[in-house]
Amino acid sequence: MSTIAAPGSRSADGLRPVNLRSDLGELADLIELVFSPGMDRAGREAVRDMRLLGRSGLGALPGMSDIVQGMGQGYVWVEQGRLVGNISLFASNRPQVDTWLIANVAVHPGYRRRGIGDRLVAAAVAQIRHRGGRLALLQVDCDNEAAQRLYQHRGFHVERAWTHWRRDASIRALPDVAADGPRISNLRRGEWQAEFNLAQRLRPMERGGLGWQRPLRRDEFRRPLSRRLNDWLNMRGQDRLAVRSEDDRRLLASLWIDHGLLTASTQLTLFADEQRQAANAATLLASAVRRHGIGRHSLLLEHPADEQAVSGVLRSLYFRPLREVLHMRQDLPS
Picture 1 (cartoon, rainbow, N blue to C red):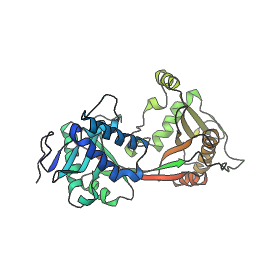
Picture 2 (picture 1 turned 135 degrees about the vertical axis):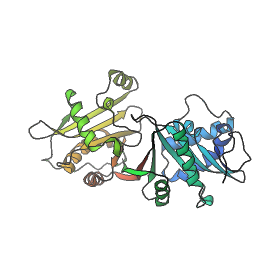
Picture 3 (picture 1 turned 90 degrees about the vertical axis):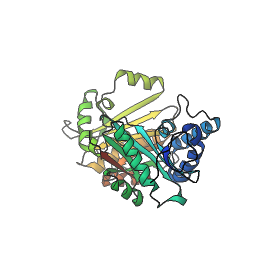
Picture 4 (picture 1 turned 135 degrees about the horizontal axis):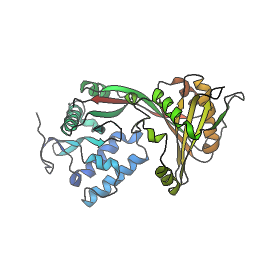
């Protein structure tokens, strides 16, 4: 069995901790090779930062991306002096105590089916245990069955499947929504608790919260003044639209529209009760398209894949699925 070499070692094969000063260039090449088909803007910027830091030999700089910082807490696998595997660890912002994220699990295509990925995951979980972690989280593409089997073998189970949707700003088609659809208005100041209760039922923490790295937190619903002031200073804003029951007593659906003057895309977050879910979702999303989408911004939405009625609405409004992922977790003994 290969042993973990010292962080500064470059000659020993097998598993060892990442050395940011010497590994970043090779890591950038590996990450780009494995993940380039689905890499978003943040990922591309991280690869750029890695190459820049790798050439400089600095290893780390204040303010560098979280992705690069997480690299420094992970492991690599070396074969014949060549870096062919990687795994990264990040401290999570979920409210549970001692939660860690596992990310960037990458093995060079020419070195797969040799158990490298399995040993990288085992090392990451062992490191989380060593640091007192109580929960390990990761995400994997729904069509990557081999990786799912690996994670299940290592004790992970599925929280929920999520689909990432996008509607391009260049799409000029206007949403076709029924004239007799539900009435929408802005969320009232005192309705944050009702909205939080709706989210607790639809997005419980044990099923992933509000999405990847988006825990279900009360302060997301009752936003403190400091956060609202920070958004104003950075030219960001959030609209909250609502649909209520006919007697106006119950909140049935709400939509967050996070937008900014300097951003190229607008992020949506939808909560829709099962009662008339499709109709309520269609009305809210169509309003977002008209206000922020056509000719202005691309619209992005991360939504549970099991809410099929909403998926149908999104397709009818010309959103397209970019990626479907499983969120997986492992609860570690204290």
